[in-house]
Image (cartoon, rainbow, N blue to C red; front, top):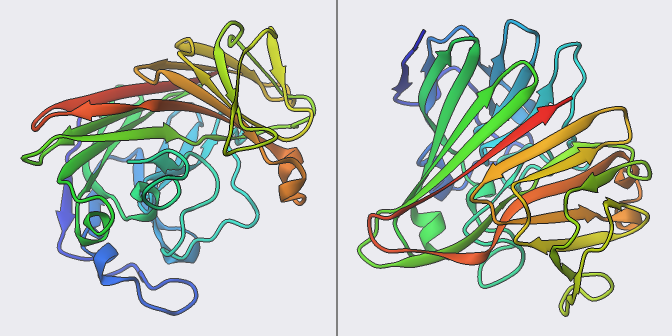
Length: 313
């Protein structure tokens, strides 16, 4: 069954004022639309801070929450109710700062650089452009286009489409970036996924043999090396890039779950845990990120697409 999605003129029933009572910057209001969704497995609700949230659910009991602000997936619950994603206790839901946790976007820049840390895509409201139920799998597609806020730091016209599909024990995403400008541009990107974990018991396998850029101890001068371990652990501070990573790696989260990260066109991987820099929560999560560290070059009208599928065993 396929169910269409229509877009109403504005959020008339949802209070879109941030929790602190201030107004959203005008430059970030442009894409705030009220999605009217007719697919029964996809619901629109008010989330934390009165931000609009989309909930996908399956007949098997799995569920995923997606905030339109940043197109951030904040929860992925498998049948039985166990949430495999993690949102930091210091996360702010006010439409002013990126949501710290779940699966934030890094686009059009990964890490520090010429524009704001990790780019602006995680700090803007996305729009719903499509919704359907593909068999027993609910699907939602979100869109981000350039506007005054993005152009103030990255002066290009673009379209980003983010398709999210939920199944009983998997969560899939497809990111498609199209150059709608008259001039070429380049970007880097990543899905900065926070997994709920016991950091001291978690491990990642499948990265042996990869070239590494280790940001410990000096993030500004990463050490080049080669991964020799069969299973990479998180004994302390970890911030390491794995270049030309395989399209399948495994996370054992230390809580009894084994998660396969399968991807296409995300050429690299990143492991991160802040250790005592985040004393209140570092023990409870690890970040395992699919990334594109080298610049993607797009000519006008060209597109780049990458997929990620998270499967729990």
